[in-house]
Length: 110
Image (cartoon, rainbow, N blue to C red; front, side):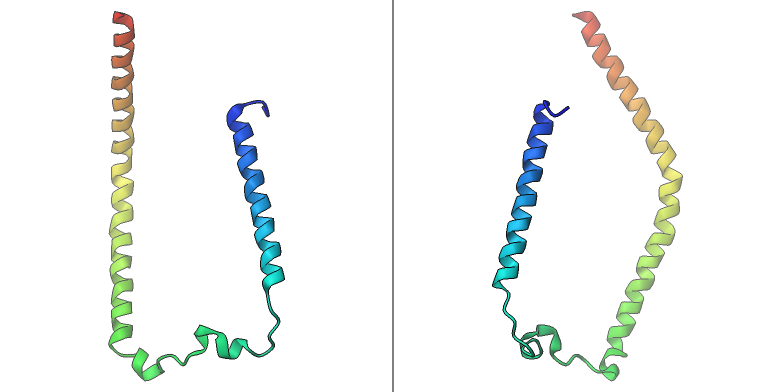
């Protein structure tokens, strides 16, 4: 199994990814600086966000409306998928059979 070309290539790619990941992890650990307390000044997520009165207005209603619309899409789309899936599968089976019969006919003629 190891002698297959595709398997050998896959093992080489896996080894390269693992070695690269370890090299990245080691370089990232070495380049890190210990600066106690500086994360309060440097972190971008420490800025004050909108207060409750600003969030509980039109913005909240739009997000709730988006949630209801997505829920409706799932409630209608999932049963429709379940209804149409058997027909799609049988059509795919029939199409594959027709294609294979055509290929076999072409081979038989030659």
